[in-house]
Structures are given as C-alpha cells and as structure tokens.
Length: 154
Length: 152
Image (cartoon, rainbow over all chains, first blue to last red):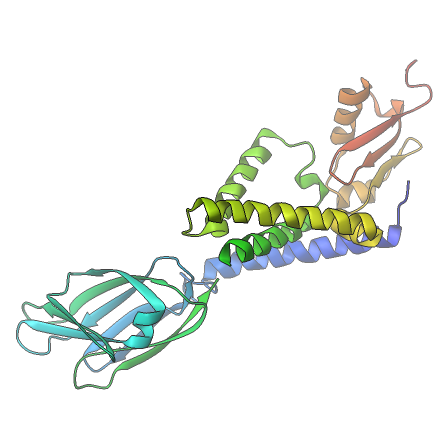
C-alpha cells in the first residue's frame, strides 16, 4: 500500500491550519465581520436624521435600517433616499407606512405623519441586489444628507 | 448565470471544508453525523438557488454539480497527485500487531474504533487478533487479521 510519510505530515499540518481558520471564521462571524454583529454595527447622524445600520450586508438577504427623523414642521417628517440606493436594492417594507411617496430622478422622498415632539423612528427593510460597495445618501429636505457606505457580501 | 455560479462556488467550498475536517468526517456515520449532514444540506440549499425557485434553476444547479463531479473524477483519474490532494491517502493505524499511536491521534481514531471495525467486519474480539488496520481514504477502517486470529 502506497503511503508517504511526508504527504501524511503535510496533510495533518494543512488540516490543523484549516481547523484554526474555520474556528477563526466562526469567531469573526460571531463578532459581525460578515454582517449582523458588533463589528459591523454603525450609527451615523446628520442634521434632522439619525441612522443605525449594519456596514456589512449580504446579497439578497433581508437587511434593515433604523432611522430617527426630526419632524420638519408640525405633523410631518420627511426622509429622502438617493437613487443609487433605490436602484441597487429592493425596498421591502417601511414602518410606519409613509403618508406619501414621491419619486424623482434624484431618488425617493417619503413623508410621514408625525405627532408630538421628539424624533420619529422609521424602520426600512430591504434586499441588496448587487455585490460590492453600496454608497447611499439619506437626508431631510434642505439639509446636508447623511452619506454612508455599505459592503454587500455574496 | 447564478444557477451555475452558485453551485460552482458551493461545490468547491464544501470540497475544501470536508477535506479539512478529515477522513473521519464521513466514514462510519453515526446517527448524529447524519443529522448534521442533513442540516448542512439544508443550509446550502438556500445559498444554492437563492430566490430562484424555478425548475430551470434547479435543473441547471443539479447539472452543474454533476458536471463538476464528473470533471473532477476524470481529472483525478488522469492526475494521481491531484487525486491524492483531494482525497487523501490510506493511513496505517496498526502494523504487524503494533498500534501507531501518533497516527491514531492525528486521525482522531482510538483503539475502540479499530476494535469495532475488527468485530463488525471479521468477528475478531481482541487487538492481538489484528495484524494491520488501515484508515482508508473514505474513512472506513480496514482490518487485516493476524495469521493465528482464527484460532485466537
């Protein structure tokens, strides 16, 4: 029976290195390097809008963005989403339901009914439809938008 | 395109992962090993087809997997070194009645595994009745009985 001691030892070494890599992948997965964990979690703010999001996303998996919008004027809060984000994702759901959605070449504008003072929490769930970097801008009218960048993994 | 690329990536990823986890991973499955395999297939199926539930997508994915398997078997037949890298090679765990402890440890095999193989395949009860034990490429332990095993 053919048996090479050299091959056998190299095989064991490669296997053990592989085990270490697999364990590392599990730990990094827990930490969120591949999305949905502390390493990927981010918070960003711009005038009128605060966003909590995951920096690393997965292709065609449901992801979510959590906004807190300042009411622009009594009874209304507005969120503007740039066309780049809209074209590279499929927006599944917006909670609460916007009172009005208007579409322009620049993107989408969502208007919400807001009562009382304080921020209005808005949750948007979506599916990333393209791999790689996904730049996006979110904002409120007349103010500098919030620029963020996602990384979409396979 | 995705129905071809996804199976391609998953096939090679599984090939590497199962090769790394070693021979013992698939040889002599316990009922729990079998359950783990079912869970693995469940995890993979979502990534294999994603949201494509069409018949065309499923057939394309299956055809891709079978073509890859066929191509790899032809390559292994032609290139023996590739076959050795992909499938490993048999390892003696016991030779001329002597246990090779370091190899057993590295291959995660213990005396009980060798005895079990001796019992189930040759009806042998004691290690002294075994001349050689070989961990085959696919995880099965082959037993060569000692000359005096029948009398033992």
